[in-house]
Length: 463
Figure 1 (cartoon, one colour):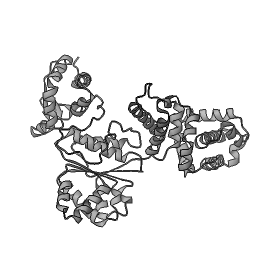
Figure 2 (figure 1 turned 60 degrees about the vertical axis):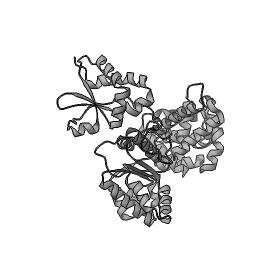
Figure 3 (figure 1 turned 135 degrees about the horizontal axis):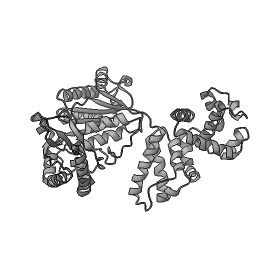
Figure 4 (figure 1 turned 45 degrees about the vertical axis):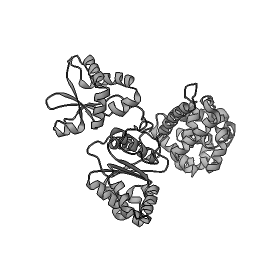
């Protein structure tokens, strides 16, 4: 039976990743794709000529050996850059893109021709970005832009609330794009830096140099573009910069806190062109995504602080953080930072009560104080009940489930003990509250509607 070329390449990659190391593999080999020509030949295609030359010098002999070892049919494999392939008009659809997961991003190579943009943060990489339903489309677009893929939309605008990954994505796109094509010019700016640099250029009569710096970029990235709203001359300059770049097929990626239609303080022409590209919304992270972010963050902190034990924490502690810090990923990570700063690797054995005690001052200072009465009123209203129903003896499911949800919220959003919560729900025993909390945790795993109800109530109660 013939072995598919993609399967041969996957096996070769598994060995190459181990032999070359994750940094070299991710920077050079992971960007290549296997393609089949019209005549049935097989070509390993790199995104750039530089990547092709690096592979030819450092890895091609070993790739050829591994290919021959795993391909019983003895098919020949060529190495070409994407530009060579395009010029030869051989470009058939990929047989299979590289199946191995890209390695964690490494620092930008010193030999890169593109100067490293000021303000770029190494910690923000595509590999460290945790995806979920709220951001997976934006992440897929970011990956495509960073790989210099053909058929791109222009401009691309990522929008969403503060603290949910827009700056992370923009930094990651810049770093990955520079790694994939070191011969291309990447310019990354915050809107604030764009404004200050433009004003300084005006004052020093250096606007020509400012325009040349931006308009010769192969990829221009601007973070928090909404800050330019109301600055007429700066908006005019940005508008003409976009027009110049797009006319030459160069790429533009921006972020904002709102979609273009809501950027009312931005010039109508600029707003129109932002809307005409690809607009990618990033929604607030759901609970499963927040838990994933906490687990990834804990792994990073474990490496930074040289934990001797596995970087894990008690599930109830991570769930407490995920349920309490819902408004911003930055706040979520900040809470975990606080625990690790206080306890170092002992955070791995931290109990829920200890975590609540450490974070209590932080919570009180930054949040609206929520009472059990508030929770009962909001829950009754949400489920179309009377507050008295929640403290009554009635046990039918239409009342019992909202009552359990309210008890769960009381445990999450207040510092009341289980016996105290039980007393406020009609004098119930603390074991009843504990059963309610555990039951809601079990149900959330398989009931998306209940999860949405709880998140809606949590946001409403926190104001």
